[in-house]
Amino acid sequence: MSAMRDETDLRTLQQLVTRRFALASVTYGLGLVLTWVAVAGGFYQASVASAVAQSALIVVSQLLFFWLFHRGVNLRSKDPSLTEPQVLVGLLWLTTFLFNLGSARGSLLVLYLLVLMFAVFLPPKVFIRYAALAFVSFVSMAALDYYLQRPIETDVFLLQASVLLVTLIWMCLFAGHVYRLRQRMRQRRFALQAHQDTLRGMMRQLEDLASTDELTGLYNRRRFLRIAEGDLNRLRKGHQSGLALIDLDHFKRINDIHGHATGDRVLQAFASVARSCLRDDDVLARYGGEEFVLLLPNTDAEQFTACCERLREAFANAEPEDANIEAGHLSLSIGLTLLNAGDDLDAALQRADEALYRAKRGGRNRCEPAWVTADA
Ligand SMILES: Nc1nc2c(ncn2[C@@H]2O[C@H](COP(=O)(O)OP(=O)(O)OP(=O)(O)O)[C@@H](O)[C@H]2O)c(=O)[nH]1
Image (tube, rainbow, N blue to C red; front, side):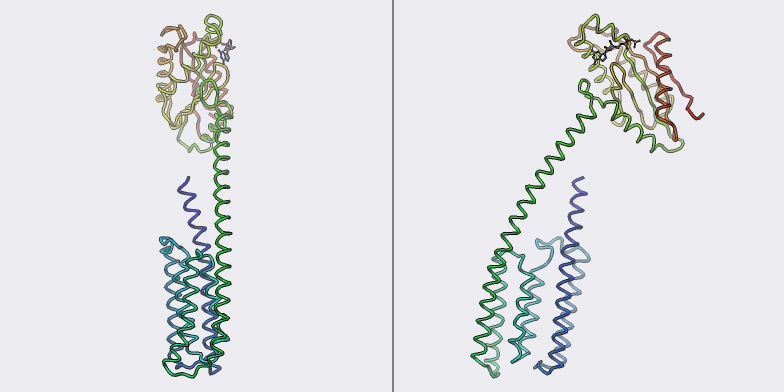
């Protein structure tokens, strides 16, 4: 159950991060369009071959990310959306692109913010690192310009650097705010999950209470009928299930002689004896009063009779605790029948009841079969 939930959670997470990757790829696509607009407009100062190489590298990097997401490799990472490598690739691409733009560089500064938008869900400390990297990258371009003795408009550069710095500081504050909001939402989600688990546990307890007989701990009649209907519906042609009605003999007398409390102990003793005689798949329920019902999946007349006989003998040898009833003084009668595919449960119960009546009339302490099916 929990494994299934984990798998569903993983699938949902993968869908989410894949959508985020698709958004990043679209952004790279727009970046490529901008590159070629810059080339066509004559703003790109490097060769067309370098623009082609840059575009090819972006496509290859995105294909690589796609492969990682497609193979689910990203799920092994602490950050399944692979935000950090994506942002790093973004900053690297942007810096080389802007470096080749010369004087038009300033008008595309906003692209740094676009790349950093993807990092806004990272912890503030990590975000600050990438914001600092963006700023250093921008300033390094001017340093490289200076080194390569390209013409620099110092005033314009200082203005651009200041604008970038202020915007990056604002983004760091915003990222911190988003992070705190996410933390709070996560805490609420955990609290909600804990409430849900408690509610589920209570529901299970209520279900158990509503489907269990308090005295014996066995299923009650309602639950039994539901299980038996399900078993009957699943029953394949050629397979059979055993159905038996079990009634403790002269139970009224036990109550009258030993008292109601002792009668209760006898009922409990029957439940415990029956449990030790039956397998886990067998379904035993208290049908009402001192009557019980048994469903034995996947059996035949011979095995089922043997099982019921075993149960009858075990109960005859039972000595209920604190009941002052010795072994050999208890007995029960059983009416048994077989369920076939397409059988009607009510009709089968009726057959078992008639067989039980015959067992009582025949002198009690016996198993009486009714093998003829309703549709035979
Ligand atoms: N102690 C106790 N007695 C119960 C309980 N439920 C039903 N009974 C009693 O079980 C008795 C059933 O009596 P009858 O239906 O006459 O059957 P019987 O005495 O077992 O006789 P046969 O079935 O013909 O062998 C009644 O006296 C009910 O009061 C219970 O939960 N505890």
